[in-house]
Image (cartoon, rainbow, N blue to C red):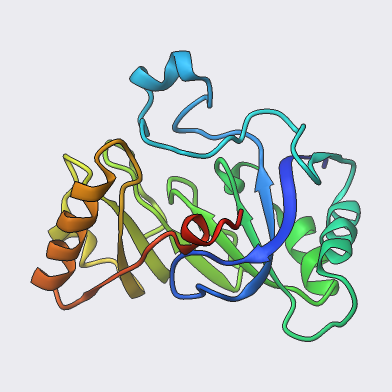
Length: 210
């Protein structure tokens, strides 16, 4: 099976429990909650996405013929050394493309595999770290994992129901929008009112990282 990747790059994880960890990001093209085109945003399930995942023209992106080729490219971005290799599969929605072959190839290359998913498709059981970011109006089937990251505010979100899901960490992240300052305040208030939750910020944006 081939893989369509928007971009691939080495960086530091900017949000969530693994903030600050060196990682190769593999951003897959395509999503099932928005086409990625601005003319479709108003009618999308997720209307606030701030990521370009359309096409395969980003740095390190392209169409990879097989899993071994993609894993080799990720290894090239990581560089020398096999210790603590960490790859983040993101998008778009990575579970539209992640399969047995890719999980096996990345593990064979020495990577611990993390995924950032909207949870509407069950995560591959071989993935080592599962982060689900639920979107209001979607049907989440992946209700367990390592971290749940709720972008806030999201009208229509059933927070009480989400708190019954089987995640180790519950994180709330301010929505980056025209009302970002207000969103930071309400996200802080959210975390203060709910001890189960922790605040996470998009530190890569503050630091000028990708």
